[in-house]
Length: 237
Image 1 (spheres, rainbow, N blue to C red):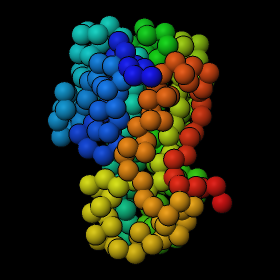
Image 2 (image 1 turned 45 degrees about the vertical axis):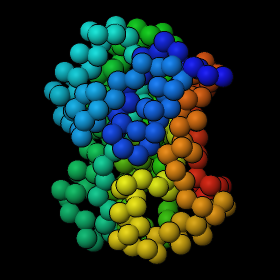
Image 3 (image 1 turned 60 degrees about the horizontal axis):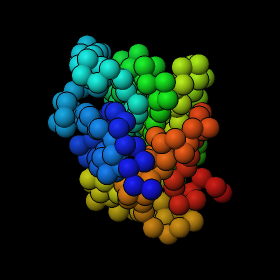
Image 4 (image 1 turned 180 degrees about the vertical axis):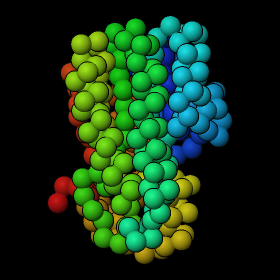
């Protein structure tokens, strides 16, 4: 089943690291023409919470390719602190880094997704969008990812008339540079995560990419508005 995305134009945000980087590489292996966007670089360097910068970046993509077949919104940023320790500024920065960072690229891409006629938008919620984890100071993150989940359902409704499908992947704890720093700062996190996981291991970006490929492909042509947990069973009980 090689090159399941052959000839498709795919835009991946947050593509310089973690899940975004893994999905971008997997899309390329499946034949997609990938445009990688990240604040830290990629094919296009862009602050995805800056409305003007996002509009400029996607206008350039549209001029070059005339359509976008796949938009994978993997970029995200969050502050982690309990409510008593979180400032209002940190709260607002987290909501911008979880919600604006999905809304602005999707809005800017929308005309080019419509031009595709069979486009797929793939967002990332989280296990924390649907359950709480004891000892995790993730209040703002939970609010943001819950918003992404709700946003995806509505995007599926608004996109259906244009052949645009919108779905969520909800990862559990995935090992990335960022989460490894979190584990180093608080080693007890790993034990709490594994206690909730049915499968007693932590996830990796390679555990996410196959689902993203499927959602981006014609194999998922009847799938929209879905939220797919990839979390070692953590949200199943």
